[in-house]
Length: 72
Image 1: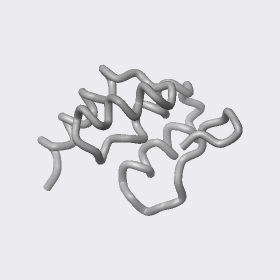
Image 2: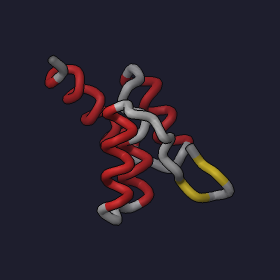
Image 3: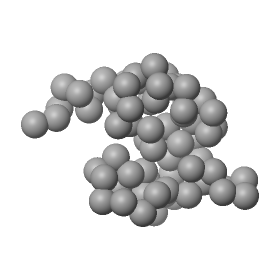
Image 4: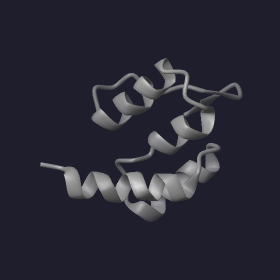
């Protein structure tokens, strides 16, 4: 989510938003945080969202795919 040019993570208990929020607290770069945020979507949609909000689409693809295989 982009708000006035700054990235902010939605306040939900979703584990994907939590990983982006954790990265933000650890002073991760904007690109890394933006790449973590859209992880709960399908890979093509997540890549498009990451690109739109300033993330790295290829990193997002790896995270989405790894989330699928590590989900319980």
